[in-house]
Image (cartoon, rainbow, N blue to C red):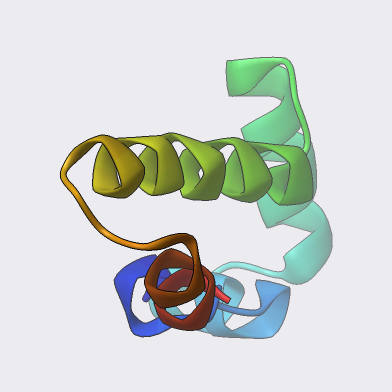
Length: 66
């Protein structure tokens, strides 16, 4: 979804995993030591760096990754 320019919502993730939002957030934080939003932003930044090194223009990366 990140490559499509949008991050999944907490509800989408929870529904996909068949858990509640609160359970998802607490389990994710417990296992990774960070919140879902922080994790998603970090992955998006890593993807942007890769795309920029691969000769994409900043505007293209911004449009693609939101």
